[in-house]
Every structure is written in C-alpha cells, then in structure tokens.
Length: 100
View 1 (cartoon, one colour):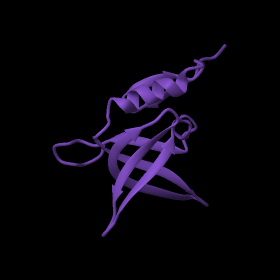
View 2 (tube, rainbow, N blue to C red):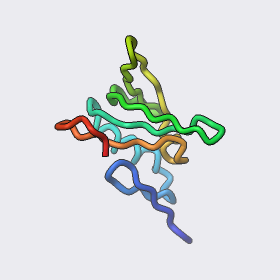
View 3 (spheres, rainbow, N blue to C red):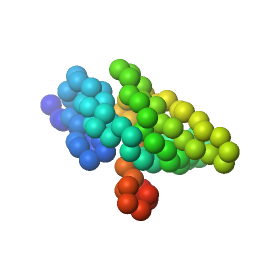
C-alpha cells in the first residue's frame, strides 16, 4: 500500500495513519501564540492570504486572531482543512515578523 505524506508546518504527517488529524493538532498546539500566515481558497481561482496570531486550539478546530484596519476578527479553521490542503498554514519569524 502506498503511503502519502504531507508537510504540516515543519513536521511530516503520514496520511495513511488514522490519527492524522490528531498529529496535525499536536503540531499546531506547539505554536499557540505565534504569528502565522494562512493561505485559503476563496473560490473561482481566488486565493486569500491573511496573517494573524494562532490563539486557541480545540478538538476539531483552531482559532486565528486577525487584526484588520480598525477591527479584530477571530476566524476558525478545522484540522481537516489543512489535511485536504484547503488551508495552508505557515509560521512567521518573530524577529522580523515576516512569514516564511
């Protein structure tokens, strides 16, 4: 049987494992409070890129706090969004606040 691998932040998750979502959650848990960049599919060949702070994790979702012009939004994403590549999550460097 072929094994499929996916990069999850800086780790690698084996997709043939039944606990792939838990592995993704563990990786994300290690980076709570850090700045992240989210690249999401906005439909019709439109990509939305947002930067924010990884605020909280729950059993099936995680929350990112995004500061816009004069407002603050909290957006939730599911771990399955990362697994299915609907959302790409990148860590940002704390020194220069640029995402890699």
